[in-house]
Image (cartoon, rainbow, N blue to C red; front, side, top):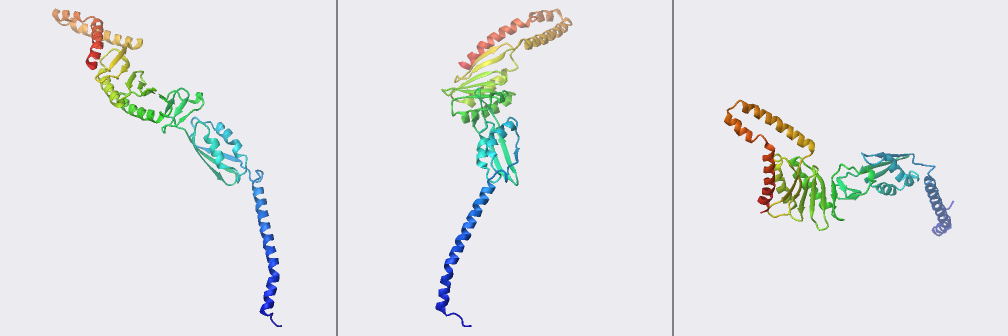
Length: 307
């Protein structure tokens, strides 16, 4: 059998080319069709449904039921077609949610790791602020009232947090804490301690003025029967103080201690000479002399520091 000549072989190859092209087209169409059918099959939730949404995280204020309800519409798709970014956006739209990580876990689980907001303080009456200065507004009933109150113009959260931390560090030395911190529209600062003392600090020298007041407070705290109610530090060389009497229970306890001390002193005096008894009788009523000293001290305190 003779082999075909070169021209004949070339002619035979040309005859097969249309068939080969047709075969390639058919195979390509088959693959595309199979791919489309596969995608359609996988996109059917009944084929690969999500049966479980696992939520993890330290949730103290956020209710799991609220989170499940927020993402319910986003997880109706199947395992392969669920939009994890949409689930993330739906979860992070809740006020108490700061950040969410979403991932699929084969074969039928969606895993949500939730980082809850950590409030640093109340922001006004109906909001909270976190340590990064982000303000969020949860349901009023879920706002912890034990937190300190910060209040200031819009956009001032970061500055208020900085001053809050500065004041908190200074007050801790006197066993106090910040109860409220206000910044006015004119950029004037007003602080209230957790013990109820209101301190006006003005627009300049926040830390310096607060530190100067605490130095005086430390000296006067245990030496006066009255309590500080309001302090005005908006003076270059002094301060103005409003004093109030302590609560009735505190006064009663102080009077009882004074009477006990008085009785002990009188018993000691009876054992001494008559001259000593006369000297003791002059101080038998210490309340009058104490009230006189208090009145003088109120005036002298302001005159010395504000002159």
